[in-house]
Image 1 (tube, rainbow, N blue to C red):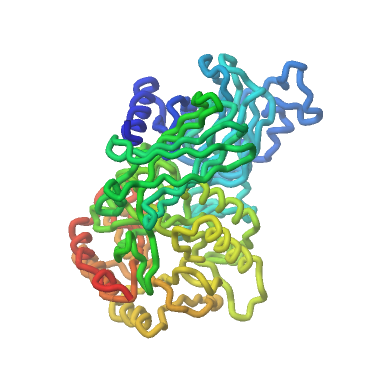
Image 2: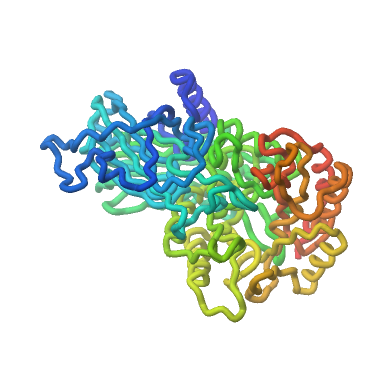
Length: 632
């Protein structure tokens, strides 16, 4: 069975078993076990504006003593006052709470029964994302904490609850908007404004359980090595024992094309090469997004299978030649669109899995072959759809506010937690072939006369951490404004100039090694000198077009609104033509895919309805880019 069929079958079974369950699909499609239990749906819930819930006994653990009743249980947690629909945040309509005020802390509670057939297994409790600082209790026992609003974490419930037993799960999520934490575009004021949008607090992605063997496999790093016709795979093993073996089998179209195995020693993280015969080599590309299916088995010293997991991978390379970025050795002009991943009813959570795929389909309909995932770490299901459809992605962290735009009080110095959380992003997303570049920061500022600040250290730290983690993709130190790392793999700038001749003049210096760089209105956004790296205009356009705006509604976009739809098409085509005609530019990123609340410069409306003829936008981008005619 292919991984796509396996995921489809798991999704279908979940929908049949729980037809009313929100977001029922399997949440981790690149690392699939057959047994799992979705915990989305109705949970008890309570807002805790004073963050006093622990003292009031909401956790079920005594705040003063933490003593149990001798049977591993603490006090029964007090009932929570309200209900919420998980995985939607309380600020969203889909959650049933629909409260956009500040939430310093929120509490969740759900009673479940662990499946009785999960015997001889450890039960793992998964949270795909909780914003921001989560503490989890099960049956009154604190089982774990996690800080960071965009990455998954898992908790082993062994010794806390047994198969067939009931479990009371309690979650506290703290999210003080005043703290210098990575938030992306979440507004720090009560109301939405400018580029800042409705906040997300607490659980906003799927919560689920799975049973695993006491010794089991963690998510691997799968690195395609096109030159060697092999996948280099590193697999962490939990609880390894002498005599164990890791076996990997690779299938193409249902046919086995490679098998390999490696013995596992205690405390060993095995690396194994799965070599694909040259006659079965099938590359992943935007035009032909072929995926190999991989099966991982962990065997004991008697050959018994302790763990079996399915995955997939794409064989492709991303390399730099001069000013070009090549996919499989060929120039592929990256016609990217800025995608912020917001939804009017779910905020940062897509209402359905189909909505994730629909965004990719809309972008392709408009002529884009990929996206810059902007100021948000997207759901894993989105990356899966990008892998399957051949949609190029640049991964980004949600750093907005650290030394960037907005009022001075919003400029926050990043801390080491930015690096910690970014490493979790890389760990989760490393193996997705659709991701062709990393960009941890966006629009950071640094004045020429400023003293050295924490931001400089964190920028370099994020860049070095990314390079140490992943040598297979280019890294852009920060998108737009202050490039602070001299050896950054990629250089870029942002320009929302709407006058086409001025825009063309702005971009014309690249051929002589003097590309457009950003300067700010409050301080010079000082950058290290350009050294001939691949270059793209990673934000442009943003044409203000809001034909569906209600009377009195405040909207905005860049430049003057076109006087007619026809003027919009002419401006869009002319701006794209400037960049497509530049032989020294490897791509661009148009702002943006959808309107987002008051920012109405998307090529489709916030509700994903059409407001333009996307066929005309596709035609405007259809010409062969100058970079594709020859690499420099």
